Length: 205
Image (tube, rainbow, N blue to C red):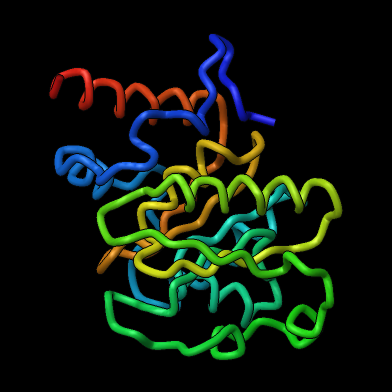
């Protein structure tokens, strides 16, 4: 499931979760954590279509309104969609209908279809981490898609999404003014992120 590494580190319990993120780490995260799909909008769309076609039924997590809305328009709703109704810090959407979620999903009756959480800009709150964990646990249990609505800012939640996701999950998130980043969740990718975090926070002690 990828919740714990081979040395017993529980990703959910990393010390950075529940705190304001160090500026050095924020600068590091401006570098894509996976493959950057850039260029004109049409090129990005075609590349994403190819990635989705080759995904082989692995789980998909989308982080951000723009990528989430695009997947929905393609009829490829992510298994976990994380949104805040803002794009580039400007409120664009009012509700899930604006993001083109399918009527079938919107009319579904299961009680935890939508998970609400709070995550101020520049933070990764414990509440947001628990929301990601709750969504993944429920999805794996019953196979039903979930949406996490963030009050605040969702961009940094890509980090716990990658760390908490099962191996082979595809995480898609927006890279401001550059395009979309596609991250295949592997043991190596999780270790790379943890080492980056440890290096910055150990240096700052």
